[in-house]
Every structure is written in structure tokens, then in C-alpha cells.
Image 1 (cartoon, rainbow, N blue to C red):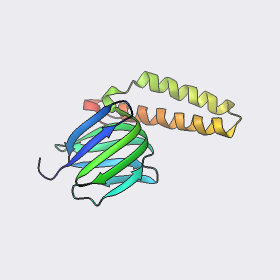
Image 2: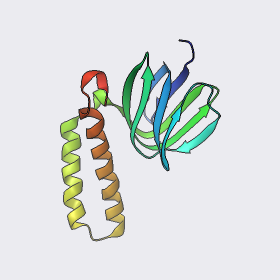
Image 3: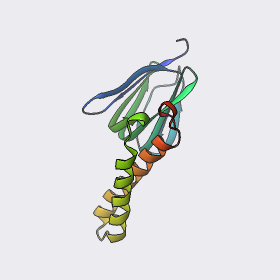
Length: 140
């Protein structure tokens, strides 16, 4: 592929993706960022959300939560705490996690529990939106 960059997504337990792509958009901790070939090197903390990339003109999605993104020499390396391709997301499981988080939110007393619960709720909502927005070939 001409004019591409290498995208690698890894978690502590597996390699999720290793592909040549045309574009990468990721949820940085301070907002979404985009990377095209020949991008300047940088490092960013990742938030919770949907990473998207273009390959052969088609958009693909991966849910990510936490970790870091490094851009250098036409390569984007995502070191994520959690990463799931949209096609691999179990929507029923995510919906149940969302329901549990919403129930805990109404009963939360301590700030620590509330923060943990809010993160769980955000992960569940992002998983659901990634998988259900576009069911064709794992697109959102």
C-alpha cells in the first residue's frame, strides 16, 4: 500500500491488530486525535472510546480503554489496557454491564465507588455504540 502507516494494537495478554492503514483516529485522554502518514512523533494517554482506522478506504473500529498511543516513523502503536474489535464485542454482555453500572450509580455512597462505577458505565456504553452503530464488517 502506498502512503500508509503501520497500526499495531496490543493489550497485556494479546496482539489485537497489526495492519497497514491509511488513517488512525483514537480517543486521547484530552480528546480525539488523528494520524496520517508522515505525522510528527508523539505520545498520548488513551481515554475510553472507539479507535477507528481506514484501510482500503473503508472504516474499521476497535473499542479501547486506557493505555497509551505512540506515533513514530509511520507507525502507530497502541498499548491498551483493554481493546476489542467491534465484531468481537458481545453486546448482550455490555448491555448487562451497563445496567449493573447504572444500578450501582444510584446506590453509590463513596466517591471511589462512584468513580469506578462511572468508568465501568463509560466502557459499557462505548462498547455498545461501537458494535451496534454499524453491524457490517465491524464498523461503527
